Length: 425
Image (tube, rainbow, N blue to C red; front, side, top):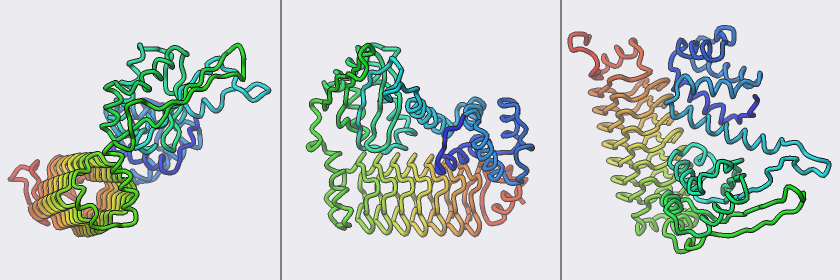
């Protein structure tokens, strides 16, 4: 089935497959056992990254890309990156199926299921909604409150704001609409804690007997005053800061869960600020002072942090995939279990940093200072460590470290704790 994956989604699928199948042998087994396909007949590229690129290209052109994703997930069901890709393609296909339903002569769908509830959210991007487990869980709990109506399901997800369209029985949709309008349930409060708000909802109840006639009701939840909500106020302030009003942030130290995506905070003083779980994707934080700040579980994908001061910062479990961190001071930082896949960390100062169990796959660490850093359990598949200072850097159980690279790192002063003392050259 052709899902029409965008270039970005194909790249995400490539990284997911590399993460799930770190060797050609494991990838070959998956294709053989799950799809009865021979990898050697699809590509002869000697490099694993090239192999997966050609595999995705072939599957996409021959319309079995969905089968490939499902087969990979079936073989490695615990891989979070594969799960996110599978969920994204599932929702995308639901949207495609909805738009491709057969039409009658008047252009209306022939389906009998013509009842919809469209919920408009803000405070989150389209990609984040598709990949964030916490948000999916909160939204799912909201649906489960509606008497477990089996006909109720997400029909499609649209970008911009975002809009979620549900289809179901008129009774089930009405119950969900009443729940949202009341604004007094704990599930709505859980969404608010994630920095997400229901702007409005539109209930469309159409009669299957009388086509082209429908009753539409638009409403907003009660007890949710967007202007008075502190997180939304921070979002508004973030729009003001796009003019780079450096120094104004000194009075805003508590920015936990704030949505600052794409904000221009270059050179800002955010030292010791609480930015835990904040949304800073694509934000410009170059040369900013974030020393001692709490950025645990923050979202900083594709953020610009070059030459910023992130010394002693808490970035545990933060998402920094494809972030720009060249010449950044991360000395003494806690980056344990952080996602730094494809991050640009060339010449960064990571001395004494905790990078245990971090995802550093395909990260550029060339020339980085890793003296005394903890990289135990870190994923280093495809990582560039050329010229990195690894004196007293601790390694152990690292995917992506070949025996040749291991010996080279030991020669340069690294400590491998999974290597018996007598085997050290």
